[in-house]
Amino acid sequence: MDVVYAIDSGKTPQNPGCIPARSSLKKETMPQFAANLTMLFTELPFLERFDAAARADFKAVEFLFPYGFAMKDIRHKLDANGLALVLHNLPAGAWDAGERGIACLPDRVEEFRAGVATAIGYAKGLGVGQLNCLAGKAPTGVASEVLRQTFVGNLRYAAAELGAAGLKLLIEPINTYDIPGFYLSRTQQALDILDEVGADNAFVQYDIYHAQRMEGELGATVQKNLARIGHMQLADNPGRHEPGTGEINYAWLFKHLDAIGYQGWVGCEYKPASSTVAGLGWRQQLSQ
Image (tube, rainbow, N blue to C red; front, side, top):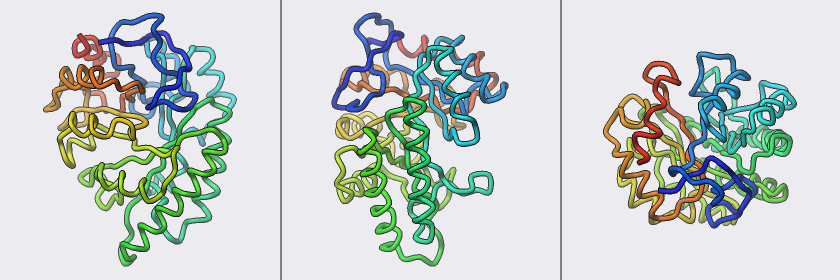
């Protein structure tokens, strides 16, 4: 397996934008792992997690939202540590109150559109090439056709705005055990919606943990839909802990991703079983 601890900005079918891709300059193991700073290094304040990720030999990071921090402070941490930012989300409503996105909510369209503009501003300032859109929980009493029309309409709007800024749009199926009622929960559902959206800069964000909980068939699904997957994330199941702690055969899956030519980053969006640093040995153990 080939992997990367040096990066370039080459474009590939899975990486048509400006996100750093694999380089042939220095190869060790593959895939390329990005630290999710919302989930990892939570022993530290958010801005200190960038330093910790760099000390742990990560070359890229992702997180849920940058909006509670000054853009210049995040940019400084990225630059000071030589880190690429490979993903963050569009604004997703009142997160602390339990909302998990607003893109399918018919009464929140104007708020969604304002959030797209905010996210593009941050993306430009932070150098990220793709943004994830969380569908949200389906509200009771709203017809399924209305939810789908709202979601598709919002995605068309977001894809057009992001496309004009040179950015990719991602949508992420999320399991309904962790988030009951989440509107987008299966890979094929996401693909069908993207077909209806009809935007060439819109892709699936494939979270291995969520997919395992909802449908399994990880290797075959990724291989079949490789060209439509813009980003991947990982965690094991049960518990959403480090790879190697549960039922998913990550040693095989990492080799499979290499064999089929996945060129993107894999975000480490898991809950460490103990401390973050103590649990990082899986990167070498499962990537041999």
